[in-house]
Length: 141
Image (cartoon, rainbow, N blue to C red; front, top):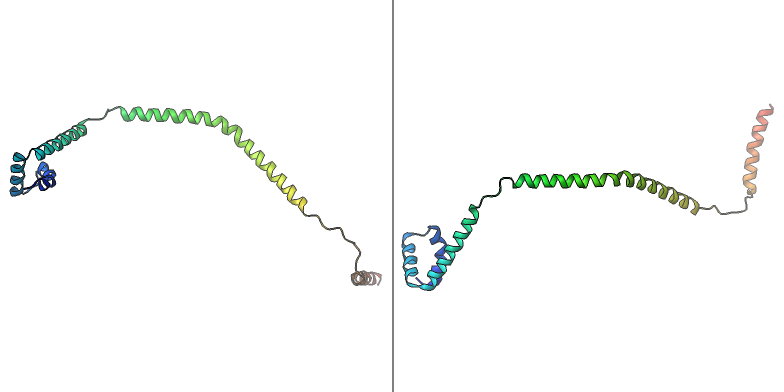
């Protein structure tokens, strides 16, 4: 077995998942090659450190301390926000209403009817006279 094959099979060898014939070849190569033996030793050491880290148990009261701190922070934030909302909300509403009224007045003043000669054409005057006369005729009878 060469070094490259030994390196490829070292993970499976450490996990114990190799077939017997390949496992024997890897063991023989590790006995002969110092580079592969050193690499295998370092990988085994890294695995043991990782497994040791997995065994560390967390603090039992850690979650309750974190939750208590979160609740304290929420209460503090909530208490500081409420006085501002009591003042700012009405002020914002009043300012919005004033801006809306001001905008309405400005928009209303944009339209100005043109000043024209308010004389009525003769045709319309006759139509109006006819309507007035017919009412007068009906009222006299």
